[in-house]
Length: 363
Image (tube, rainbow, N blue to C red; front, side, top):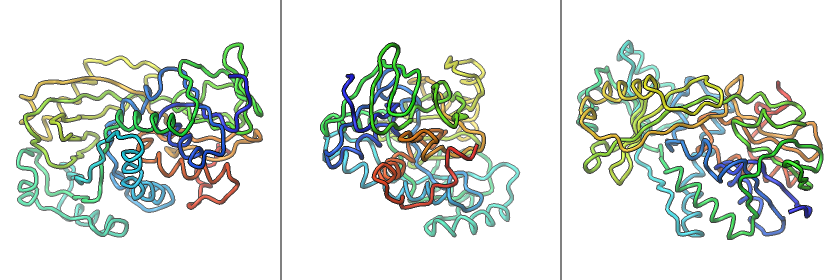
């Protein structure tokens, strides 16, 4: 493991694995992925897999363009993984419903609809009677909803397995339970061991700020998200549903994912009565019918947040060291475009989209 590599990627989540896979697409580089725990056991494992670039967009801008570009890449990205590995990551275009808030009027919803049409011409405005035809089990009292038919979902745990298998098939070396302590020019230090590489990519998510030697330091803080899933008979909801800070993601196998809290709790991943209680309460506010569904699983994860809510992507001040971290709740969505951007930077090409808003030097 002390041999020189062309690239070392720190972090084995969806972002890190997608980057490593992309960098090995022509088999010309030696790539090593190191992760502090098990591959894909961080934020990627905990994610719901809702791929909705416009879910929180109130205005345009570079970040929205980044999310839309990655969403457009996803079907080909997922299909390529299936062809290469045989692992279906559950990519499905079932659209998403964004329910109006209780204080939204039909006029405010209509104005939001007109705004969203600038970026998603296929968006539809649904009045309450139309909404009930689409999702008969909805009981939330709203004045309407926006339907985004192009939104997708994936099953993140399957996605990570597919990315890991693809990396292995392409010859990427993967090392788990390898906690990186320090990064310097051409060197990644793990305990008493030094790993050397021409290029180092920091994709370590919520743990990025713990790495010594980064210049500039990366102000990434963990944000805990508690999440659960329910078992349903069949598939009572046909599309993803978002209301306030809660959402449903229905899986084809009958699992209904309900998420998610957003808590400043450091690295504490414990499940709490308050957190799970909030999720169950919001779920029943969306549909009172879910109160009879059995709880299948409860879990939590740590999202890597930044002060301005934007990811950190680009060159650091240390020669050969790049950042691809701080994606917060958009890591699964932004994996394809981040991998493409990092490959361009390593190849000394211009990325397809401007990345100045995500520069590590902005802090």
